Amino acid sequence: MKTRSIRRIIASQKVNMGGHIIEQPLPNKFMDQLDPFLLVHHAEWELKGNQRQQEVGIGGHPHRGFSPVTFVFQGDVRHQDSFGNDMVVKAGGTQWMHAGKGITHSERPSKELAAKGGMQEIIQFWVNTPAKYKMEKPYYLPLEAKDSPTIKAEGYHMQVVAGEYQGLKGPAKTFSPMLLLRGEIEANATLEVEIPTHYNTLMYLLDGKLRVNENTANKKDLLWFNNDGETIQISANETTRFILLAGEPIGEEVTSYGPFVMNTQTEIMEALRDAQMGKMGVLIENFD
Image (cartoon, rainbow, N blue to C red; front, side, top):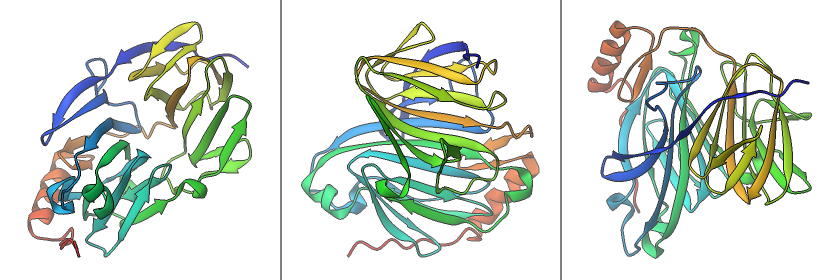
């Protein structure tokens, strides 16, 4: 099988999101999105402790038309939403939310983490939804580490969160074909990942250092692959945590504004109106 070439290695940029300084690999100056992936954010910070939940994290806000997905690497995330879901996802777990026609949710550390303090590290990425599914009923799927099947081999392990890989099927429901992996490769180990040629593919390194097809990538780099092969060849200079996002392009017009991702400007205006009218639900957070 032919090995994919790298189109570009892109260093992540720091951005300010509501007072939080985070890494933003996507969008970047070379591309606004890579269909069907719209955004990738990597947040890593230490909570000082002796705080209440309502003083930290991100309060209630609406979404429509796509799936915001959160991989939790350190600490935890408490999700509450306007459909009554209330769940804490811990390190190794994944929070999958299909916003559909509209949902309001909050994302905060657990009560225990806010009180005791400690590291919180997450990656959130946005997956676009095809037009015919954008207005479906929202759903929320909290996954513990054990819920995503894990491939363990000499020198590396990978969780299959969505799609199928080596006979394992990820638990997340997607509306277009894709393969979403998260893993870690040890120093001096090698790994070959097979991906359908027509899938657009990104790889992001949380830390460490890799050689990919004779190219060197460092921590917080985004690798953008050409669609010219079926495999990716990886060798680790250092122990490295990574995520791999690969998906079949949807091929539709994308119009976005803040937390809404639709196909036309008219649909964006409708989303703004519906959010203002409370049609995406009302969230009353519980902090008892």
